[in-house]
Image (cartoon, rainbow, N blue to C red; front, side, top):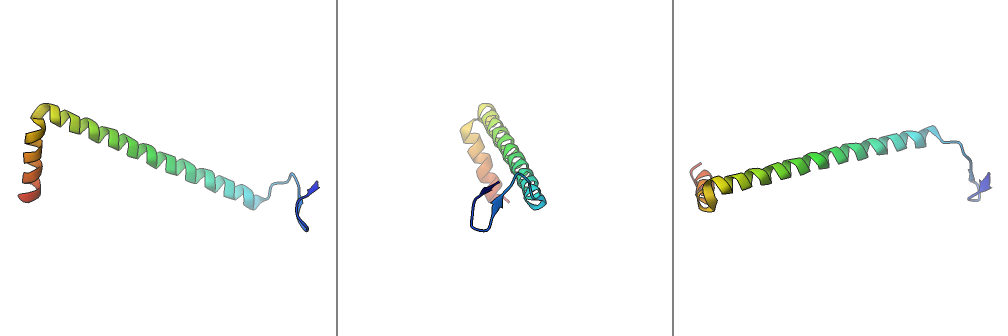
Length: 73
């Protein structure tokens, strides 16, 4: 054992509380990563749909449809 502070001694034993914090932190990282991945998939899908609409209808017709959807509702 080595002395790290005046009244604290570092050992190889892991406290149960520290272990629980590590598990909670890992779970948060997994959850956050999953949310980020879903957001990336949604963004790529929306760009693919927008590109498809531009190819099928053209920019002018998309703008006309968007303006009608905003003003006609």
